[in-house]
Image (cartoon, rainbow, N blue to C red; front, side, top):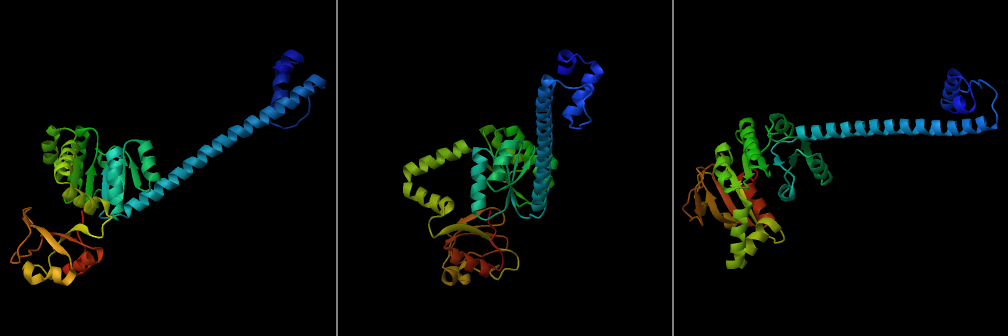
Length: 314
């Protein structure tokens, strides 16, 4: 514009001179420059080159970030593909993030699934593997390794979405344990029909816990510390009696669990789901049953060794 209007050049000459100046080709002046033309050419060169470098830098930075993101995504996908027996947490809100923290504290690998990119980024920053997508979609659950997972925890604000996620998960993995959060009392039965092993209503559970702290504070405090806090030496665990275990078919008294390990058997859950609290010495330890035990880490480790298999902690 300067060469055309101020210097009075033709449109073609002005465009040509502008192009050679901005691109720093340096083919020479179309016409001799006076002082004003020289000053404008200097300013045009500086501004043009700076704008070009800024644009190229922005494009390069965007491409680099894209490539790094793709590399990070592929690396995370490979880590998820290598998992087996892990937990999947659907929903990384206020409740889901706390669930993930408790699971990770127990040493179990987990994958977070959330439709929000911001929440997935937060989960990744917290050190968890994350899949950004709709957990009601089969492809999203497959990316999270649903077929190899041991547990699914659904913590969504929408009960309809939770029911859909549970239905999809149960079809993809019929053996896994599914725990879901119900925001409304009417959704509890629907979630169970969809395939949930356990449904938790935070409102109801919170009310029960508050009542326990009010009426039996010592008991509630003890259970809270043993189950959740971990600050006491003793821990409450469950261990499954697998087929082929040396204790399978023996009586509880014959097993001498307390004498041999120091761990105490508080209850026994039979394969049909029924509980036997404070089991007597003549109770038979049938294969498939689950022992509810309390003890120190060493005592529980000794019992695990006697059982002849890994503890089935859920």
